[in-house]
Length: 284
Image (cartoon, rainbow, N blue to C red; front, side):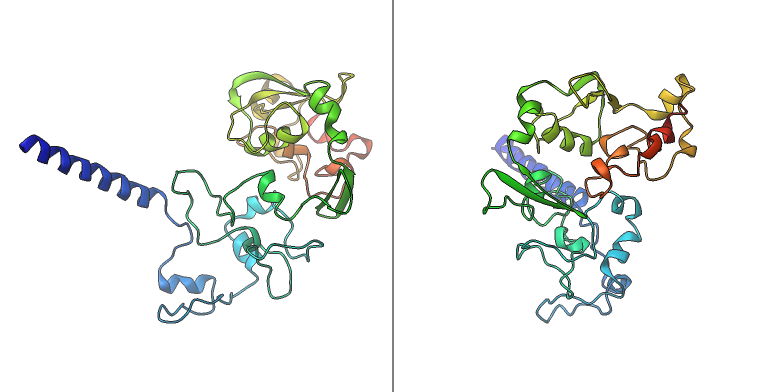
């Protein structure tokens, strides 16, 4: 009897421990004290009244940028009126413009009930699946997908475009599985390599991206730039490189040179006229 009682008590203690741990770890990052609401809102919410959208003390995008300066550089454009229909659960502001809160539920928890990161997104999907909530197929044109990315609107064959990539040759070759690439590069490879599944929680090692079948314009991804610069004096020091070129934990990624929202040719982070982009890192 004592053993049974001890087992029951132990079971409930374990459950309680995990419940407390989950509550502590899975905190709501923007869950402040009532008096701290005034950092962003013009008033403090009245718990006795129906919850309504709270007015902000400043433009919501500027408020977010106070803490998320680096994140904004790699994010969807804000302060613009979308050219396509936006789902009702992804609200625009009073001017009909897209804001950080269109995609993000600011007071959501960091992780879901299974411990998966939510990224504070308004839907329980990430990556391409989330983007397709707005950037859907154009039903009026067969086999054509229309994407609105920043200043660019591209209509192209949805499958034929990537047929050679998916069935012709593998464009990415892993050379160091112990050094994982960043999550943005994983998303890029999910579509552009054709052999790596998109929207999957996978770890992909550092490697070489091949732009064409003729072995031209290959470039490393996931390589530690400072370490590479130490061994290769034809590379410039990190401090000399244009800030438009981003590194991820010191590593090179697809988004170091490319921005999916850029209106520059091939969606580069800066013009490559006279090899300007290349020469930011390479001395020659």
